[in-house]
Amino acid sequence: QSVLTQPPSVSAAPGQMVTISCSGTSSNIGNDYVSWYQQLPGTAPKLLIYENDKRPSGIPDRFSGSKSGTSATLGITGLQTGDEADYYCGTWDTSLGAWLFGGGTKLTVL
Amino acid sequence: EVQLVESGGGLVQPGGSLRLSCAASGFTFSSYWMSWVRQAPGKGLEWVANIKHDGREAYYVGSLRGRFIVSRDNDKNLLYLQMNGLRAEDTAVYYCATRVTIFGPVINRYFQDWGRGTLVTVSS
Image (cartoon, rainbow over the protein chains, first blue to last red):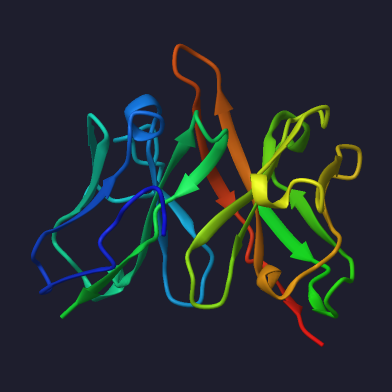
């Protein structure tokens, strides 16, 4: 079981919006930046959000990130079938001295 | 264009050793921390190790410390992962990634670019 807790799955219709939560503690999310990664089926992970809410070049503004206290949230608007993927949050844990990934959330676009 | 190409994966017996390589191009390799991240079949991502840009410091997930060794050759733009005493639970796709590390009031760190991975299977 991951220290960072994500819902195993979320789903929504094309064009709709979805949010994915990532819950941690004061030694990880509460104390460090959060990043998000998208893993399309059969491919390597890809950086989606860094520094809680910043998008790398080439990531559409349909994707957004936020953080409050010991939780972070990834938002995706205008859902497309091509957004179907696993999404992972990640951050450093100062108590463990280790990088943590959430357990991952599988997004289904119905 | 940043390219990271892992190699060296394969089938190995329990207790055996394997050395993975990651060939980097398209960026100044010697300026970046680098990392290994693995993913067991059907499972989530697990951070394995980081190595500082100059190779002088390395950090590991606690459960692997002592069995796995990360190193780099900045002259050849190569990252390595030496894996010893392999176990069935080490079976995974191993990815190398550039690890952005920006020191400030809060250290900003994340995995920016990823390779396609190499599969390691530990089985008799």
